[in-house]
Image (cartoon, rainbow, N blue to C red; front, side):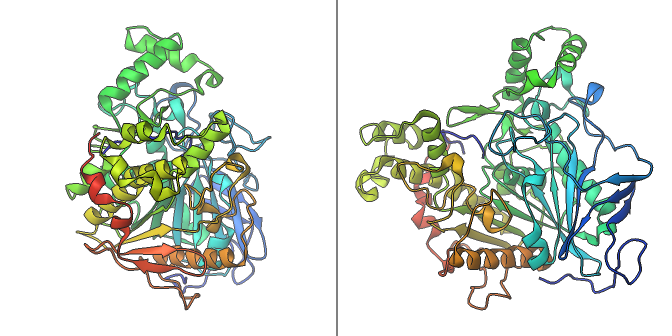
Amino acid sequence: MSITFAVLAVLVSACGTQPRAGAGNPGGPPDSTVRISTGELRGTVTATHRLFQGIPYAAPPVGPLRWAPPVSPAPWGGVRDATRPGAACPQQPNSEVDPGTPISEDCLFLNVWTPIDGRAHHPVLVWLPGGAFVSGRGDRYGAQRLVEAGDLVVVTINYRLGALGFLAHPALAHDGGQVGNFGLMDQQAALRWVRDNITAFGGDPHQVTIAGQSAGAMSVCDHLVSPASAGLFRAAILQSPPCEAQGTEQAAEKASISYASAHGCGQSEPAVAASCMRALPASQLLDSPAFFSLGGVQIPGPVAGGALLPLAPPQAMAQGKAARVPTLIGTNHDEFRFFLAEQFQATKQVLTPAQYPAALAAVAGPNALAHYPLSRFAGQAPIAFSAAATDGGFACITSEMAQALSAAVPVYEYEFNDTTAPVSASVAGTPFPLGAAHSLELPYLFELNGLPLNAAQQQLSRQMIDYWASFVDTQTPNAPNAPNAPKAPERQPSGQVLSLAPGTSSTSNDFDQQHQCAFWATQRPL
């Protein structure tokens, strides 16, 4: 399925009970140091958790390693300082990169949050950041609540972004002629690092769940169908995944050749073109080639068609070619309002009722107005348009993937539905309410942006952390510390979904009907 969006700038208890004390301090309080395969690390110890930051999981992707598959990092002598984050990968200035955050191509770092309860074999959550494959960083996601309340080890990672992560120029072909997907291979290298090293932090390498939101969730989709990711995780969590938005090798190569030419590297000899591109400073590579378009914003990303990613995830899932692991998958009720809010912040313009019919027809076809009349939305064109784009671009494709996966494994589907969720300053002040828009569930799971939650929202946050942690631990999302929270229903043909809202979390049987998925099934491809 494809859909033209208006804009996209982003996109428990542990199983084991064996005692474990800090490295070199049997029976005592947790140490601030651990030893892994490449050397010793010193992190930060608080009253409730330990944190190790800026750990290299691959060698710096610079020089001849720019646009090459990741390789293992070099070992170090002495004790490496792991009390501060590593550099973020090169990206345009944006709200996710705080002033003063170091930016460097030497950016393949991860961060490990651990409980300090003295036990081993904690379940592990590996978080893949979102950001439309052009922005994001792992240390932005404060995981202390998941660690403390959920009793998990949490790993957050960086991976190469934009042109540096996904350029698919044939002169940069690798592994038998494959193109692009360097950022995806970084993620796989991080998962292998977790497999080989997480025991040192009290984590269980056999209890790894991969998770992500937006582009991070699309990455999880890719790992579900990539042969190279097989065996690196036992469960998956996908939050608002635009998994249909894969580039094809042909389109990606064409766009990448044009990109190189525009940057002065249009030589026909592959070795010369590759050398030219690798000689450019990273500051000249912050723009990105266009592999697919979502809302007129051209962004790069994973490329389907080669051995690393033979099929786009929805196609692979429909054919039963996805990893058979339990899956928690969901969307937000008002996903697309976030993108319209970003468009308003950039242009100070908002979709008008007069413009609405043509705009709707462009994304949903000539029959859509009967399904999304303005009268149904109190005459508010942005809300009406957002409903259509949310249904066609997020809710229904996610429902289809959930149904396909459920043929082989347990699948649990949710919808985040807090219509008063707090919003960041970057999208505040729009002339329409954001509702439960894209990414607004993140502060309920992570310390993020300093956004405050009221008492009811804090209760919902505790429930969500319970659901997520229970799923990571047992592959069944329950909320044992919230007795009034419903048990998450396993996906059935009826499409039963867990609705997450302050004070009123419940299960629903009419998700597909609410989002008009029968109509959207007739619109593909546009």
